[in-house]
Length: 281
Ligand code: AMP
Image 1 (cartoon, protein in one colour):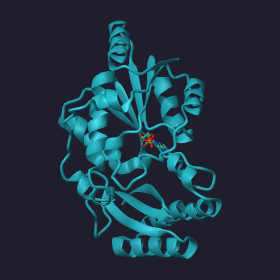
Image 2 (cartoon, rainbow, N blue to C red):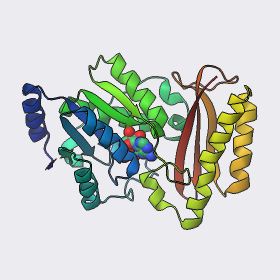
Image 3 (spheres, protein in one colour):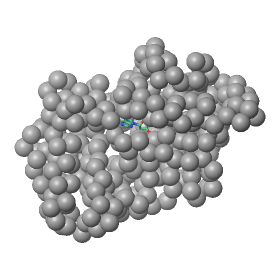
Image 4 (cartoon, rainbow, N blue to C red):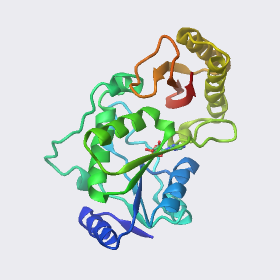
């Protein structure tokens, strides 16, 4: 396993792999790797000749009041997990490498960021699409692996890649959860014991909502109220949003119909957690 910090070096390695006819899989992350990341890496390893992982805490996707500086980092642990998952290359660039002085270019996908996390985290998705574009240009993978945990991010990136005619395929991997149902996240490390316990209620409430739809409920207002009530009853969380959206446009639905994502974001203490569940009606 190689750890590469320079774009030039990364280019050289992937060009050589391409010339040798190797299939390249790519998993972009912000590090502090957990079992969710491992699931993406495992799939990537299985389906490609070269498995590339990037670790980069991207400052451009954090708002000024967000947790960029305290975002958890552990290079040693990440390297161990990557080795265990048989990663070939870790791309580990510095901020200066990715955004040298005078950097000016951003990639913006219209409308999809008007919903869910978009209005609550202004500029976040432009930061995401910009870094993913740069990483795709550097690594030129055949397949890009993303997690369903970040549902809005997957929709926005897939749209961008379609619109910009990228030949790279996108594969979306199901959310990996702790036994309690809590979606794995690097940010779970911020949670106190009692907060982690309360956080179980999020996925429970999403499962209850899915069951309501499967049992015939179609009024999204009623579903959202039920989720809200269950979270309020079982946690001290401050709800940021609870929404039922169309899985393609991400537009909120009054009436549940077609492929739907039920998504939520809550603050438990200072920690912002997101989760979602998909359902077809
Ligand atoms: P992050 O390091 O949080 O930026 O995540 C990197 C990639 O891993 C993204 O595509 C995430 O959606 C994915 N990911 C994060 N947590 C999970 C999880 N619990 N299950 C599956 N994928 C995940």
